[in-house]
Each structure stands twice: as structure tokens, then as C-alpha cells.
Amino acid sequence: MFELIFHDCHLPSALHNTNQYFRVVPESFDPVVIKEISGLGHEIGYHYEDLSMAARSMGVRNRDARSSPLPGDLLEKGIAQFESNLEKLRELAPVKTICMHGSQLSKWDNRRLWEKYDYRDFGIAGEPYFDVDYSRVLYITDTGRSWNKRDASICDKVNSGFSMAGDVTLIWKKPQ
Ligand SMILES: [Zn+2]
Image (cartoon, rainbow, N blue to C red; front, top):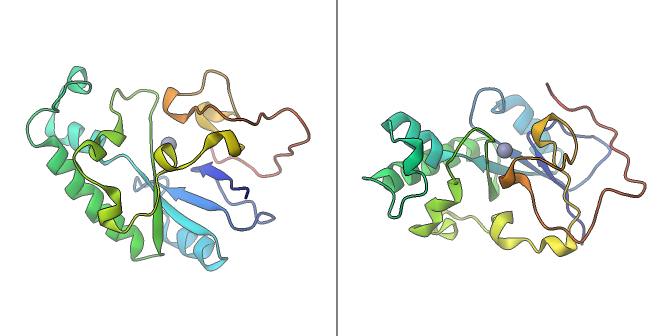
């Protein structure tokens, strides 16, 4: 089985059965596009960043990002936000998988939500960082505004058994 996971990029219409992950931030959350892609038979996933967003809105310092346990009720705020954003996306399309957003500028690891909570309790079947065997998947990332940059943000790197060498042709246009 072969699956492509895209990061915030526009849909290549020649590809079938892909997973498209959307953030809830305005530049990614486009209801018309999401419905259209879902209507073409592609899966819609949630590209979540609720822990880092909650930390920002609560004014938690970046240097606390690695503390254990996390300060105050940050996890509770983060999961509440996750749940409501997931609902928002599910108003547009069925959502069965999630994949965390890892910004190069952020110290926050959004996966830390799952230290206390279980995404399966939200009807989520998988999170690629936990549930995908990357030794069997070709992973292509557009992080850092180019394809498969070696110094891509750490959260968007995986150890894959495949490489881009060969005749992989990228025919779609990356959004700016
Ligand atoms: Zn991302």
C-alpha cells in the first residue's frame, strides 16, 4: 500500500486517494476547498496545533514547552480547543486521521496532548507520527518552502526507507 501525506499543499488532481491535512488557521482553513477535495473522494485530516495555540493564548513561556508536567491547565485547554476545531472541520468532511503541525519557530510539540489524552477517544483512527511505519512509506515534505529539504523542521522529518532519488515527478504547484 502506498500513501502520500501532504503538508498544507494544493491538491494535485492527477492523484487519487490521498490524505489532505488542514490547519484551522485562516491561510489553510478554506471550507470551499476542503469540501471540494472531500467530494473528490480524498480523505480530509486535521493538521492540529492546539497545544501551541493554547500556550500562546495563555501566555505560557516557550521555555516551559519541555517541562513535565506542563504548567497549569494547559493540556485541558489544549484538548478542549482540539475537540472544538475537530468539530469545525467535521462540519465540512469526515475526519478520521490527524497529523500534528510542527512550526520551525515553535518550541511546542503538539503531540504532548496525547501524554494525557487518547485521540482514539475522539473518533480518530490514526496519527502518522505514531501509527505509520515510515520504513514502508515515501514521505515528501514541502516544509521550509521547498521539497524535501535536508534541514526541514525537525517535526517534519521522518526516517523513511525510501528516498526522493529516482523518477518521482512533482507536478503540482506549491502555495506561497
Ligand atoms: Zn505543518
